[in-house]
Image (cartoon, rainbow, N blue to C red; front, side):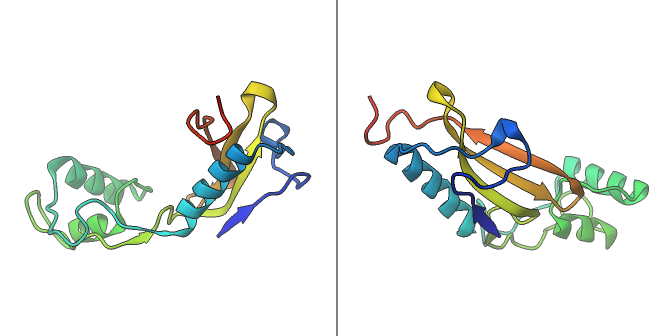
Length: 146
């Protein structure tokens, strides 16, 4: 879910509080970033037959042995659990959401003066009590900018 905070909306922390900006270029940048988070993402080499690499296999084995979360695609972990070895084919990657493990995503404009920017705030399924974010720098080539 992508939620857009409008000026005056409550935020998790004052350092990232949404602000009323009135800058049409910044608003277009915010809207563009929000659109990316709503669209389906097609991974590189979608539909091609990937193979299990040595580093991915080692990471999956470690995660399985220690019963810990991993950055790997769940299909890779499942393949290693089922006995896949480096060089074995993996299922093709399928399109999905751009940010499939994030929840409660907010796209906002934050900052003042030259520090204005678009920020994305989100929760992550493996760390439910934490709130994460990323600030995007101003687009210097946006309309209405010198």
